[in-house]
Length: 149
Image (cartoon, rainbow, N blue to C red; front, top):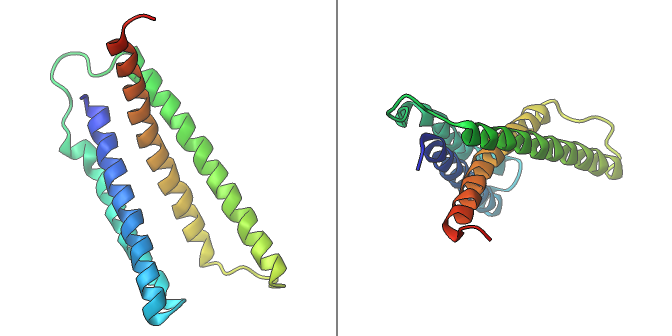
């Protein structure tokens, strides 16, 4: 397993854990104290930040070559996938909020919602990038193990 895969695993684990714990905390707090105070459960998303420490934890691979053309191509495809999915999530969130507020006859949207939209797009980009790297490396390894068709 190369450095990029190790960093991707750390990102997927940190972000996945953060999302699961946040969802559980919000659900529990909703039934105990209700909204809007239940949104404090989002604080568990701070765990996702530990994924950013992956380049410090996983040192560069020994040897003169750190990455070949295949690694660069996988990283490029993963970056494109991360951007595309985060753009889609951002668009769906914006349109969903607009539709909700329109049906509730509310004319203004709180500015406190904007950082949450930005966070959702960013988390989606990093999670999708890391997950796509793992999927593409797994796909390449299965083709090599199976041999030529």
